[in-house]
Image (cartoon, rainbow, N blue to C red; front, side, top):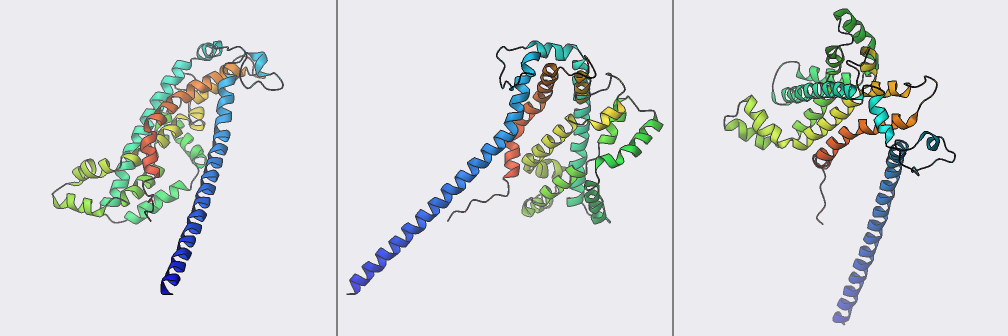
Length: 303
């Protein structure tokens, strides 16, 4: 009798385990489907505009204004790229963008890391007040400071100069906040061990902290480079001619190069594609490190 009861209990346990496994598999399939659906939606939202830009950059003017819209040109028209780079001093704009972006990004990168290091690993009075000031700076839109910055740059005689464009863009509240939070997540045991071994402040930064912060620094670098590369308002206010104007300003001038009331979208979209390429290359190079940064806190359950 006891053997029959034990067998019935065992069969009941097996059935419950099978039902639980089936329920888990259904949930997993549902989660997978939702995930793929979300990726498809994101791909459509991001990919369709990019496809439209690329297709328009290769279309002739009649094809661009054809109704219904032509999603891919019947005859490729690469002359749009030649016109985009010759109608306006495109390569001068590109040089200026490289100078401004590289300088501002380098300054922000250095200040962000050093500022975050000081807030986390150094002791000084008023440290919390400094951090609160940085957080408060994050809440202030850049547009609010445009008038005061413009007045100051005008008084210094820096309008239409690289220093007039670069210096006001070097505020680094976001980078300091980002790197501070990352430095706080580093293992205290490793930091304490380095200090016990006699590592000074500079050695602690260069030999311990930074080697463990590669993914976070890559994310910081990509965000900074993209933001500065796409910066429009401040360079537009500071640049009077092509000598210091950046690519976003050049695209605006290209848009109205033929007729202020008419836009030839083929060359404009060709210039847009050329403007996107440098940042696309940088993202492809650093994407692996960015993914590591985004998934650094993820833990996969083992049971």
